[in-house]
Length: 380
Image (cartoon, rainbow, N blue to C red; front, side, top):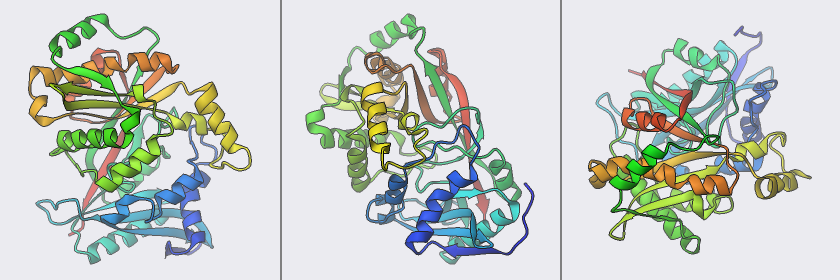
C-alpha cells in the first residue's frame, strides 16, 4: 500500500486512552471489510489486563501504538515467555497483535519490537502470537471470503506479504477445515471407529464438576501436544481462566471425554461460534447489545461452531485405539450438533504437516478453507 505523509511516532501503551486506541485500531483499519467481526471491547480490555489474562504471569509483554499526525495507524506487541525454551539459534521471542496498512508504519513497528526483544537477549523471533500460541496466532494468508470463527484471526490480504518484505520468512502454516452436516457423516467410517475403539467409553462433560473436568481436559492437552511445534503448556491459572470464560457458553454435551478402564485418555471440545452472534454489535454491549447477544446465543441460537481443542495422550496415541480415537470423538459430537441446531463446524487449527489428522478429516467430508502463516526472523 502507499505510504502517507507525516512523521510516524511510536508510543508505548501506557494510559487507559492508549489501551483503548490499541484495542479499537483493527476495527478502524478494517472498516468496509464485510467479513470483519468486531470483538467485544470489554473482553479485549480484559485480554490486555495483567489482572485478568494469566499470560502476563509468565511473560514480559510490550505494547506499542504507531501514530501519524496524532492519529493511530498501527500497533504491535512483543513477548518474552518464560515457559518457552530457546532454540539452537538462541533465546526465542515473539511479536503479535500486529496491524497496519502502510509499509513505513510496519517498518517502524518492527524496528521498535525487535529492538525491545534484542535488549532482552532475544536472537530469534516468531509471530504473530496474540499473546500466546494458546490464545490466537498467525496471519491469514488464504480464505479471506468468510468471517473468522471464535479466537481466529482475520486481516487484510496485504499484511502477510508486507511482513515478508520486512525480513520475515515462513516458519509454519496452520490450517482450518470446515465440516458441513447437510448430508451426515459417512456410516462406513463410523463403524470402523466404533470397532477399533470399543475398549474406550465416551462420556460428556460433567457440569457438576466443571472446573475439575476442564483441568482433566487441560492435562490431556498438555500431554498430547508436548513436543509439537511451538507447544507451550497451559498453566493452572490459564486453565481456571478458560473454565470461567467457557462455562456460560459451553453445553456439556459439546465436550466428549474418552476413558479406558476409568482413565481419561482423549477429549474433544466444540464451542459455539460466538463471532456469529457478535456481528452488527460493533463491539459494544450498551445499551441493547447485551439483550441482542443473549437472544442470539440462547434463543435464536448460532448455526456454526468451532473445535479448538482435541488430544490423545501420547502413551495411547501410537496404538490402534489411539489412532482411531479422534475419528470416534468427532462422531461423538454429532448428537450435540443436531441438538443445538449446528449446521457447520470449523476444526482449527491443524499444523500443515499433520497429515494423519488432515487425511482423517478429509475422509469424513471436511474441506480445507483457511490458512494462517506464522513467521520467523533471525535478529543476529
